[in-house]
Image (cartoon, rainbow, N blue to C red; front, side, top):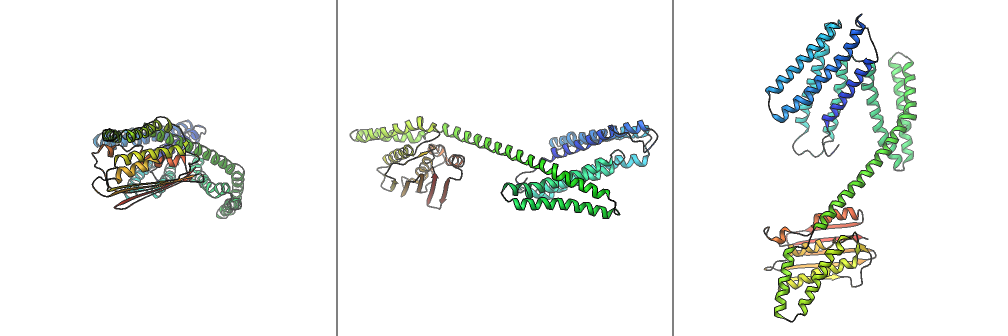
Amino acid sequence: MKTKRLPFQQIERWSMTFIFLAIILTNVLKINTTYSDRGLENYFAKIFIPLILFLAYYSVHYKILPFYFTEGKKVKPILLTILVGGMSLGLIAAISYGADISENIFLPLYFGAVATYIGYLVVTYMLDQILLPPNLKDYTVYNAVRIGMIYLFIPIFLFQGHFFISPVISVLFVIILPALAVILVYSYFLIYKKKRSGNTKSSRFFYRLLMVAIIAFSAFMVLVNNGHPVFFTIGIIFALLTAFIVIPFFELLFTKYESYLGELNSLTVRVDEGSARLTFLRSQINPHFLFNILNTLYGAALQENAEKTASGIQKLGDMMRFMLHENTREKIPVEHEKDYLINYVDLQELRIKDQENITVTFNRSEPPCSGEIAPMLLIPFIENAFKHGISLQKKSWVTINLRCIAGSVHLDVTNSIYRTNPDDPEHQSSGIGLENVKQRLKLLYPGKHDLMIRENDTEYFVHLSIQL
């Protein structure tokens, strides 16, 4: 309700459908000859008049108006509206005449309903203009006001149609359903939520307060109606129904709702994790980086004996094996992830070994790291440091600290900042990317990781801690 606009078109549709269905079914089950001696004609009039009004409302509200807003044409919607209005007016007039309904009933009946509908459209249009500025982020007030307008216009419409609407329907929609809605909200936030949080004393207090309020309101109705005891009896019955049927039913509903919500959240996490894993599996080492390494190895092989070249090729082979085999598993030994980082940094140092203005420092725990970790969670931060922190023309530095302490891994990366050219292939391909890593951390280590990223004009700093 806060982050987006509620689907008011669907709310309006189902509200009016439910209201008209209740009106028609009530009239079908009851013959009333109050207004004339033509009992059968009145019976069918009270069925077909609300049916015609509903069809006219549905045609205008869900067919003609959407056509006007989507197509932007005026003449055709206006003509269709006049046609629907004329046909509905003619049919209701004919039915009223056949049922010998007085014009004092017929005219306010039709035009009152039309005026109520037009008034609702005007008010909602004004609310949209006032409460919906561009880029609205909090829809709470707007949604609450729009729901209030729907509830306000329903009693107005029910009052206009008193000829064909049973008092039972008016009481149901004007008093009983809003009261149940208030009780539902009250019991969820002040009884059920407090009970679930362990605050049983407070939950019982609000439960008793609700019962007292119902009985007190019943007593007030008795006083207003000159001491008529029927209202107090109704209040007692309503309080008993609320205590033994309504609130237990609502609690069952809340329990089922939270259960379904938990399942939905679990499925959402699985889908997000699957999406992140798919992106992760599709990722590859930057091809541009591989070509640079191969060119460097080729140059080294020409200038010196094959010792360094063989070492570089071995490290590159280890990295390729890691990418092909290790990174498809859910978890791998932390020591394997550490070896991958060492190989990556060693190859980067081999590539920039002749650059005196570049300083690379890699401090890591000498003892083997214990435990397991999801693969490829650490390398993106180091890859990012070399990508944006190295300049062949200016003084650059990359400092990496990797520590394994009592079932946790801590990585600190600091680097100078030199943005690459957007046309550089290495700029366009950034491995699995920092955003993907952040998403994977939230999914795989919720509440068990700490990621802090800071930067200024000259330096970029990352701190990552993961509880294994």
